[in-house]
Image 1: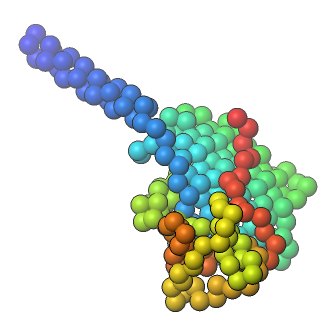
Image 2: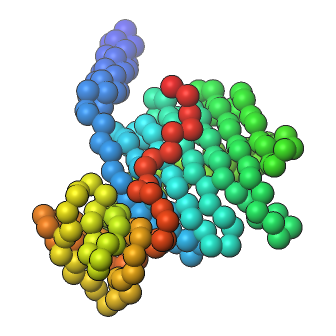
Image 3: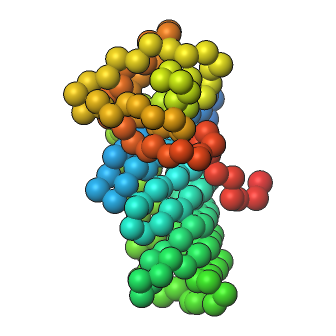
Amino acid sequence: MTRITLSLVVAFLLTGCAASDMAENAVIAPKTVTVAQAATDGPHFYWYTFRPNQPITLSERVFTPNQGQYQANYRWRSGKLFELYQQGQQRIDGSLIPFQLQLRFDSDGLAVFQRYQQGQTILPLTDAEITKLRRQAVGLATRVEQLSHRQQTWVQGHWQQQQFIPCQQHQAVEVVAQATAEKLSGQGYMAVSGQLQGQQLNVANILLQRKQQQCLVAPNLLEN
């Protein structure tokens, strides 16, 4: 009788601790970070909202010189991937083809909805392809959180008359460029890795430079 009672007490305590951890995490205010990465295929820009060890939403914009560009939204529920939506261009047989891809999952991680459109054609996704996409999304959230820990921040703005005006401001700032960012010149839009501190922009590297480009915002492809 004593052993049974002790086991029940231990189980109750463990359950209570788990519930307490979930409740504590639920009251922690979500944190949103914006980070960027200069990958081999081009710059990647991320907007990520999360609690400790619990992704909530992730938005992504990618610019690749050869493969086109795309944007994506990912959404989690109770720490599990619930939905993803990707939209952009894919290079197929030498041509850039527009595509849309949407997946929705249940609490067990099984796809309950899929839609993949390539040009004007609707194509089915295999189980292996769906599993790969889900794993990539989960891995992406982990990587973005790691980038935020390494302070891979970015600043965007426009060059006007040899001055840099950040998107979040309406006045020029002093630019301090490292050796890798010596090509800070010209006119038009520019996104750089670095930090804006007061009226001084410390630039580590140029991520994206275009004559015609509006300030980037997080894509909003998913319905509420």
